[in-house]
Amino acid sequence: MAPIYPPHGKCDDARYRSVKREDREYGEFCLGFCSVILLGRPDHPEALEVAANHFTELGFYDDGLRLDQYLARIRPGDPGVLYNLACSFSLTGRTDEAILALSRAVNHGYANHRHMAADRDLAGIAADPRFRELLALMQGREGDVER
Image (cartoon, rainbow, N blue to C red; front, top):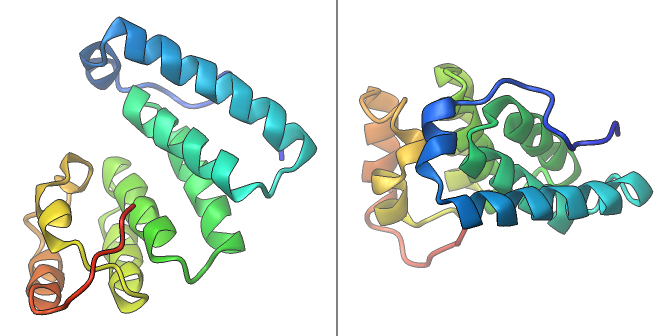
């Protein structure tokens, strides 16, 4: 895997500016730290997940997506990984792929429908009837898999 930091993709400036300065600095520190870990162990799942989450929080959606896709290849049945992949697809405007990843997350046990309904990262697909169908399917389920 190529070095992940600094980011390679474009940045959503509005999202980046919405993050408090100290949170941006912490996120950038974590990305640098994860980058060092991933140079030695490119399949380190925790470092990949932390880095993908920080990229997303800072508005580097393409970079977060790239890591989420890689993580989904090495942990294909992990509902939290699949959920995060759906968020990345949604943020990059890839609706069909977002719905597919979200459906896979639900089929593998993701059950936090309240979080899913309110997640700003899924706002790009929230009006899609398939998204509403997934929410309805989840509402009767017990359990909760955190992302």
